[in-house]
Image 1 (cartoon, rainbow, N blue to C red):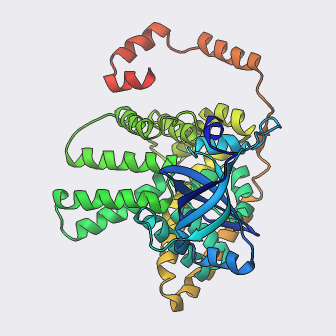
Image 2 (image 1 turned 120 degrees about the vertical axis):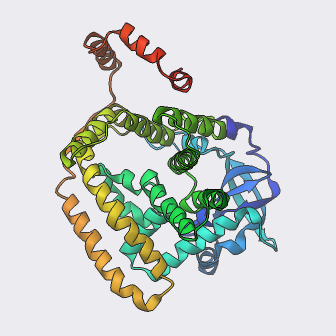
Image 3 (image 1 turned 180 degrees about the horizontal axis):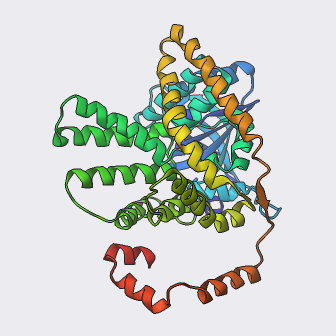
Length: 413
């Protein structure tokens, strides 16, 4: 990885570093966190020397936001096994400059304004972890703050094999819920659109940091804001035009948007949704979601080598459950953590609900197709068959493409 080759891995450095508290993870005596050194995003590793030091980092990470560090950049070994987790590629996709191993550190006085939202997110996650039961805290942290720790791994495999793990990723469903609450609050204050536009945009941008910056969060938030502004300004743009504008914004911020897996999955699904017609019945909704799931199968095969057969149907069913029950319930539980006497009356029923969901999913985890690496000859045959059995000739497709807007043509180019 070029970034790591450019980093001074063999030199011992003395430098100042900003730590993002919500990224701090303490696993035994090893601490990992995200930070910034001279404006560059780095991944830090610190070997903690005592249990007291470990406890301080766990409970009061915001007090360590500014550090004077002595250490060196360490080269990251690439994966030797095919398709195994490649930590070097992971750092590259996340735009890290390198992996910095801290030998000694000293806490500097004062706090950095750049980490204020990160500190707020840390305190919210800490509040949830301390006040709620273990099961409830896992769901609230994942659905409300997009935070998945080691405890979440226990149920991740169950939802992954069922094909609905993506419901735990902060995306359009979550953004519509939370930003819809903001908009409702401002409208209840009887503010005009001009009066509430600026505070609404500020709240939307701040919420991106509280949700945890990710490709799906950025895409969903920008899409919501764009649609929100266009509707109130009475400007009509097609769904594909809006998608193209959001894609352009993402590529300006992150030029590698289409090269990383998170960007590919998020944008592919949102792109395919443009061409899925609105369902007129519940049965059509199930069929359309399964059809969408089939369309994403080639990418899932190439990346994960498995495909949950019922993933589309389960997504259609459980998306309603998450939208109208689990997500509002989790947000309510977070608010109730500040009213401890009332919390047990709502926490216990929530544990029963999610345990029932997990129990029902255990009967569906075996409905999967497993594949190895897809051979190139099979890909070639599929492409040829797709061209031979087209319902519309190529010339007709080109004529239709010429009737589309400039933004649509630019997207396909």
